[in-house]
Length: 337
Ligand code: TRP
Image (cartoon, rainbow, N blue to C red):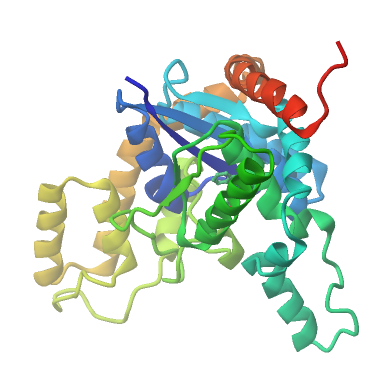
């Protein structure tokens, strides 16, 4: 049986938060346990350089994100877990794809267009002011990530669908131009059921809004952050609407359906906000305690993380090298003898 290859990358800027866990990490770890799937999960650290030029931050974030996935139980004998920058074939493939990718296609990429629009909005003479080739070519690097492993399915957020379509476009052009079935055309998978968690201020939990609850903060900090979650001015005893309430939503994302139902009743019965916050904290803390301990131990043992990633890189590179051995002669860069 050939397995479905599922691949996704995590850009290594920032510290993982509850929203990342519920929206991406948890479903990805669950999917990797499906025996009909071979999953490829990687730290998109080359992509991180586009957004962040603080080397300490990039380095720290890679370690934190790797430790997080391992602490939460990713089975790396099963999933292939690696660092993008370890796969030196990826930048090589990026170049080959760059040479078949129309510049006009990249002009239409959302991230690039948004940057141009920002320049125009503030009246900059040069619409490309501050835009690097890294940002402009972002979708080509992402296409190389995906096409390198002939991924069938790519679970992503809505904002990334366009990038998968661009990867299909590049794959199709390459196959056509060089007359072969070199690349599988990937498909974006957007899970409608996966929740977008609210943050401290009620907007989507996101690093860019500065409203996140990091997964593995200390107990004390966790309590402090939970107490900061915005609520309304209803008094204890007044019935409250759980739907649209961030506290309730976070609770429901972690709790069982029965526990969620019981909390819903407490809202109807007029639970006070202080009480609801304490209950959410207790619940989160009880569930995060063990992974937090594993996380802290992993952070103290970067050598172990390094060896796990080395094993992942070895598995990934075996495939990458085999593909490049086909691609080089296909474009005229084969050996002479
Ligand atoms: N661009 C993705 C994001 O910001 C991360 C990413 C990089 C990715 N390469 C990928 C996702 C390949 C899926 C497949 O979320």
